[in-house]
Image (cartoon, rainbow, N blue to C red; front, side, top):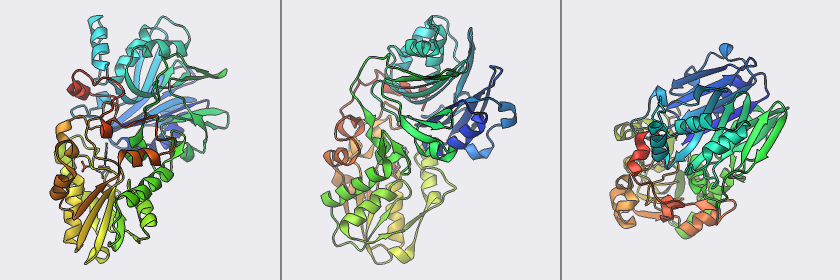
Length: 458
Ligand code: AMP
């Protein structure tokens, strides 16, 4: 997953992108970058491994009124500076810069075609394929170049792109990943989530629609729908886990979605004899509040999260993930000792976090641990931008709910049903991609899913 940001028509474009990326840090922590287009037409890039706050950019050298930015988490083996975005390249008409959130499922084939025709790549990212395709387009208008490049590209993409000093924002025809448009005075701002508009003082105007390309230049804004129409397939996991609760994505409130997921979970899997409810902070806070409200049980802070450690899952290796569970959480004995507790998490993927947390909660004296999960069992990999490509790694793809309860060491385990989840999210129940839960993939799976690990955009 990744976070993307773009702004056109503001004298502090690079600095505002920097600010916006702070609010998209949760979408990717491996690398960050900004490309700024100066009034002289020159493009400058600042990219680094690690977090935004760890010293990205010398903005003195990045004056300009157009900029795009990116926060990235990658799949295994590709966490290198060469793969940090935005991608920046020169071509016959000037510069192309591109930031991508999603995963192109036919990138391997597209890349081979380009390589057979002599193209040379500088990264292992799927996103670089798009830059080559833009450069090869015979069209004149920037939005037409992008439209040409996106023909026959399958998979998930929300994009911000600059061609010359035109800013483009686009979403794939199924609309897998979010992208919102806002205004800041006369400037146009685009971001993966509305929380990145809030931090810059921009006001949300609307979503970039699925299959839409928005172009912004000195003449103003233009919209077109040049891509084949497809059924909507918004990623439901954005509501379950990924987006920030203070954001609106896909036109709906993440907080409201998660509260409702928690309420429905409480109705499907009540725990009336429990003393209290707690969340696995931060991503399940809102769902746990919903569960507690619906059950009329107190909501307590039983696990404390160290905020100086990133999302456990967003670590490219298992060794990194294992070590981080203990570093990231600690239990509050005074809350847990002798109590029967409900632990709410938004999802179980590999089970690594949960197993460690249950042991921690028991060691702090909990008498009974009832685990409740505000999404269904994850039984399949995601090919559209979430880092779960191996079925073997998914605990629910390999074990029954009872077996998982035993492996985690809980007294009971309840997952929200698929219907419960789809009924809870704004705009549901149709129009979502729930493939990782249901096995209902909107595209044929890639011929070689491992190839996706050669280094996707996100
Ligand atoms: P696991 O320990 O592998 O079961 O991971 C589950 C934990 O990671 C939960 O606390 C989730 O909030 C979080 N999580 C779930 N899915 C993802 C994801 N795709 N990327 C990052 N974190 C995730």
